[in-house]
Amino acid sequence: MEAVKTVILLTLMTLLMVWIGGIFGGTSGMFIALLIAGVMNFFSYFYSDKLVLAHYHAVEVDEHSAPGLIAIVRRLADKAGLPMPKVYIIPEPVPNAFATGRNPQHAAVAVTEGLLDLLDEEEIEAVLAHELSHVCHYDILIGTIAATIAGAIAWIANIMQFGAFFGGGRDENSPNPIVMIVLSIILPIAAGIIQMAVSRSREFEADAGAARLTGHPEWLESALVKLENYNRQGILPEATPETAHMFIVNPFTGKDISFANLFRTHPTTEQRIERLEQIRHEMMGGR
View (cartoon, one colour):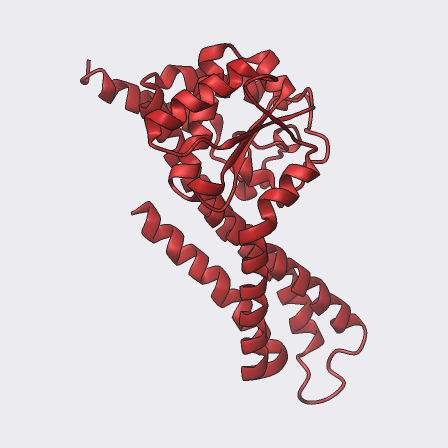
């Protein structure tokens, strides 16, 4: 069901972008918009992992530089039937983690130094199991495509605003400038809501996957509480809205306001723990 929902949401985002192209240039504009979406997705498919790792100054580690971390990832990867991903440490004190890569054969997991300092070994294992669950479900590719299309729509919306103020509506074939301004506000919001819906559903699935992979849902519950509390106090440096969906907890948690909950990239920690408690109950045989 989640897979069907994701396909529908991604299709809606693509159609939204194509519709925008049609507003600007009719059939030709729709074709150009579809072509742009294809090129951007091609680029993000092959290069987004390298860009995001470089953006956060992630440093690759191995058995010699981080033996304990590598051992946990290798154990989980073997248990999940995945190839061993590359492992990175981000030199930042704010605790968080993410996975990236277009498929299990080209995957990487990254954790901050702060996460390794804050969590105990069981909690670290639960976080890494969550990230490997994303890899299993190809969530990274789906999230990247959603983020790319949403970013493209936001970029086009900025052009629409510029065109509305400087030259829009000068001839009968030009879109009405008032309509352009309204759409430039509404369209990024619509794209953002769709993107967030994709991200939230995938977080629940990854939490469930981590619970079953470790056999201990309570490990992830404990880790989420600690990460949530810490991230309310400080924001991960260089975090961007475009990459927020990748992290195990929203790096902008400390900036949340009531209206912003509509655009949360993650379910609330309370919602996630409630789901994990249900899984723990099931694993205990309903006792």
